[in-house]
Amino acid sequence: MNKIVKNTLILTAITVVAGLLLGVVYGVTKDPIAKAQEKAKQEAFRSVLSDAETFESDTEFDADAASALLKENGYTSDDISEVAEGKDSSGETVGYVVNVTSHEGYGGDIDISVGIREDGTVTGIEMLSISETAGLGMKAKEADFKDQFKDKNVEKFTYTKTGESGDDMIDAISGATITTNAVTNAVDSALVYFQNELGGGSNE
Image 1 (cartoon, rainbow, N blue to C red):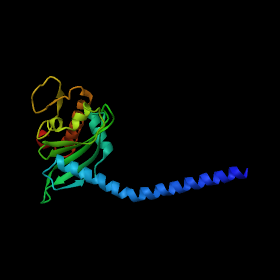
Image 2: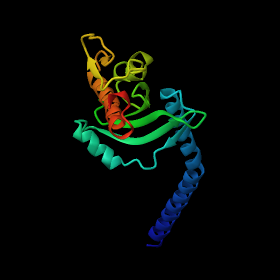
Image 3: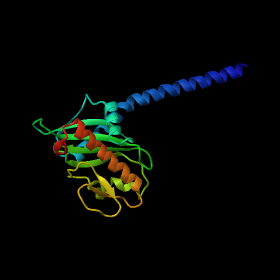
Image 4: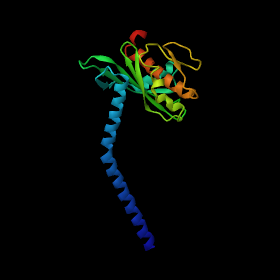
């Protein structure tokens, strides 16, 4: 019995010490990780809205209201997680960055930043998180695909597998229609939010 009690106390002590060490490690790494994540996000913001010098998160953003708006417009598999206002060096608003999470990805959720100028022009998109199939869906991260959305002022985008032309047409990634659809819908979700909540640009 004494041996059992002794072993139990030893295991308990090890568990407590391990828990304390994990707590210390978390406390030490939490801030650097948060700073690294924020830096990566700011870099993504600048890449999709290069006209802006600074970005301010919309503190009045309502995720639930945004979700309801998307559903009303047929985008039931997307969520908007954040909206940031981009300002130039004089403090004037030049556009917005809308972060969208698509739940339609083949390999899981896809997080995308979409830059939209005040006139409704999409200035770029950037993948914040994507885990699609290598050599197929992961091509969504490549410039050849992303740049199809860049500097386009349209009401919405549609993907094509037949090479149809037009500013609103996006060539699908060969063998990755699901990924193409997910990204296109995510960008369209950002446009829906912009058109209804952020001024609407020329498409209002």
